[in-house]
Length: 511
Ligand SMILES: [Zn+2]
Image 1 (tube, rainbow, N blue to C red):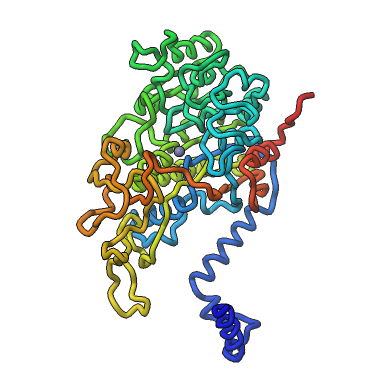
Image 2 (image 1 turned 90 degrees about the vertical axis):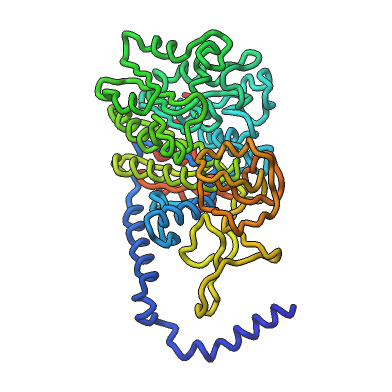
């Protein structure tokens, strides 16, 4: 009550003040401000880009796994700070796209979703339950019999069966939930190399896809799910799926299988029809770790470049899905450093696509599947290192900025997690997964003498969980190119499928 009264009073008191300057026009120092002109120019550019609607021959769907909006904000600041800017004004490549929508991510049975249910929504136009891949939500998870007759067809299969080319890229295992939802059906996302009942494992579905002539380009991690236990793999059925895949095309098309970044760079794409690259046994390295350890793995940008080069050879057009799978894993480990560096590498891959394709006939979509519980907190001063401790301005601007302390007398970082394993200081270690080898350490820590900007710093977490969790708030969808104008407002996640089918003019129903 009291607050309402104060607000009403101050509004009343403003009237005589406002009349001192004419409210009908804007003063020069306002319209001449950089803030003013830069935003006005940007809006005009975006309006020009969106004026003409066209049909998309090609669709590229970029999915940053776990790339919630706080991740976008923090990654854009870090990217700017890495080149000496204050960071806040920076924009990741796709943040310049003219069309954006908010996406509601829940699964049919969960308020906060998992990647299997969310990618099923994007690939089939239908939401389903967590943990299942391209199976309707009426079926039970991990119950093969209940999934019978409830299989859903994916956008990739539709595109492939209409004679277009298709490709998938992931920095996670190619059998992991997000890429798996482009090509497989499984009542259990964990059936990556073996399944129960009459169901097939996910890896075998990838190499055997019957739509069209199978997926044309597949680049990522997860080799162990395609080879036998004798070859350091997981398969106990004696099958070597990489050989079976090569045999499938023998005498008909030129199929090439590679296992390293240097082999990929050496592929003669003009003489290649089908390309399979399995670069690591499990997930590919975090991008910072890949660089740090000089691992012979291609970057996500290099994989994107190669895939587009090959897919462009099909004059009918193509669909390419590119997943940055490890943004999610950095967060699960409670390590913002890797989550943000992988987000920047992901934005670089989007830039590669932007530079290569014609937006006259190509739709580029960039989105996430769900968010994470990382927050950007406190009142850090402008340009404060995003991975650093909160340093506050004196609000009058008169005094030097200084490290802020909480009520417990200790400093705190701008980025922290609501839950997870909590604080760890692994120094220069760029492999966030090693966090899991150390006992949980949640709650407040004295960070006075800790460098929080090193790769191995793991942020504090309030609530102890064995793995930091996904978050339930909306994520974003960014679009540019043919059909991009369909992306606006607040959408359900399954609308991503409908945006792609509408933009490409595919007829969806059986004749
Ligand atoms: Zn996750």
